[in-house]
Structure formats: structure tokens, C-alpha cells
Length: 399
Image (cartoon, rainbow, N blue to C red):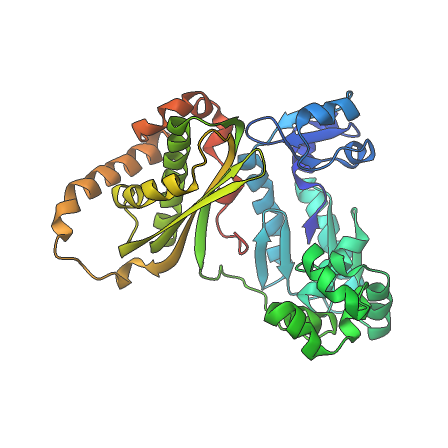
């Protein structure tokens, strides 16, 4: 199940006068289109486009800042509907679920797909498309080709091959430009071409993940439905600054902000990190990166901040305006697997302060208490939209 233009549809649920109007949802900084209606798309507006360019293409459109709190409310309601009719549901993303279909007696899969779609619209008022196939990869392709507000079940091999022959291989989730370029010399342009190529060549060109897609397109389910989130191999927090900066103090403030968000995730998942990475993207196309390993896996603000300080120096390009930053925590371990150090008691005061900070923020607001190093970003914290992000939607499998 995949919601149609979900962010736009969610705004139309809340504000009915947006129905039929060209509508775009913009990101935190108000500078970039992150979702668009079909009417906006027809005007030539693209996802990721700066708002000033979008307004030129569609001056009569409406532009609203995103509200992920509201989107999660509707997402959970859709999830509840699907769970009523299926015992196994994977909450893959905020607007996309995989589920195991269980038609009622006398009901075929096509009628079941239509029922799920209609129930979601009746209960939540969000248009969605449902596709049913023999594998997750096929189901997603079927759903994509049935949009918008479609419902389609394709289960026979003859019907599958007709679908695959009419679908470019780049429509398969996991095969984008570079992978498609590797397949092109082998005469692969459609999904059917890929399904009919030698499996060993598919693995050689696209590794084991590409081989899994080959099996899936041939109707053999090798990608299971995950009703529970699978353990993370890495966690990341970051994003666009909105306004580019070459000021080292502001860059440091962004690093501290992203670290506080990253520690939230480490605590939520009950893990520590043994390695950290800072990545900074610059407006001129360049990028900088710094890496560090910790003596012992940690989740404490002071320890991770000291580890990240030299990483930022490595990633910093003097005089260049930075527009994005991402922090990565890798080498994750459950907290119980950490060996105590000789000087473990020395950080007791830091632990008490961290616990107090967490308690205050849980009661008064996510960033009510934060590091003073973030003061250069005071204007951003005053904008309530920054208190919540799509990454904060818990329980999804793909984030």
C-alpha cells in the first residue's frame, strides 16, 4: 500500500479548500519543495526544486510548510486499517506498507486490494494505491503502475511478464542510474529483460542485493515482510542548513544540534557507537568528511562531542559556504555489551546532567534545554517545525 502524494493529501485532509489546487509542501527552511500535487507537477515543478523557481513556474499554487506530526497521525491511522485485514504488516515508511493479503472466503485478491484502498479512504480520507503480487518487489511495481488511487492484483505469470515488459528496469526500487548503466551493455532495459538474464550475471553486476531483486521479479519471494523493525547497522542525523554558511561557529552549532538529535536515537534504540563520521556538503559541489573511532563504544554527549571535534576540522573547507551536514554513528552495539572502564565513575556527573536534560525536554519540549553551542541557531529553534522530523516517526523499517 502506497499513499498517493501523501504530504499533499494530508494537507488536503486538514484544509479542504486545497482540493484541486496546485499544492506544494516545502521543507523546514521554507526553501525547497519536498512534495507536490499532480497539478503542481503538471506545471513543471520538481521535487527538490527551490521555492523561488517553483513559484515562477506555478505562481497560482499554494505552498505550505511540512508538518510531520500531522503526517504521522494519518500514517498510523492507515496502518491501523491495514492491520485489521492482515496479520503481518511491515511499516516500511510513513506512507508505504507491505502486508500479507488474506481475502475473505469467496473474495479474490483483486477485490481485496480494492477493499483496502476504499477502507483507507473512507476512514482517513487519504487516497492510496494497493498492489498485490507474489513478492514484495512485484507488489511495489504493481502499485506504482496502478497510481493514482488504484488497486491491482497481478498473480499469473503471463500477466506478470506483460507488466515487466512494459516497465523500465529503473522503476525497480534498488536499480537506479548507475546500476541500470551496468545492465545496459547486456541488453537490459525493461524489468522483463532483467528477469530473463542469467542470474549469475545479475549477481556479478549488482551483488547479492541485485540477485535478490532477480529472484523477486521471477516470483520467488526472498525479501521477507518485517512486522518488527530489524536492528540498525548505523544511525544518522543531519540535513540542509537552508541558508549556506562559511562561519566556523555556525558550523559548530549545527554539529552540536545534529549530535543532540543523534544521541536521542542512540538512547531510543538502546545502542552505543564505536565510530563516528561527519560529512559536510558545500554549495560549490565539494564535500568534506572526517572520521573517528572511540576507545570504547559510547552514547554520552561529552565523549561523542570530543570525538567529533577533529572530524569537523577534517571536513571543514575554509572560505567555502556549507549547505548540508550529516553525522553518522556506526559500529553500533547494545548498551549491555559495553565493558566498563577503569575510570567509569568519573563521568557520573555527566550522566546525571544528561538524565536531567532528558527529563526536562520530555516534559517541556524536545529542545527546551540544549547545549549553549547552538545559540547561533536560536532563530531556527524558534520555528516549531524544527521540533519534529520524518526521522522521528518510530517503528518504520527503512529508517
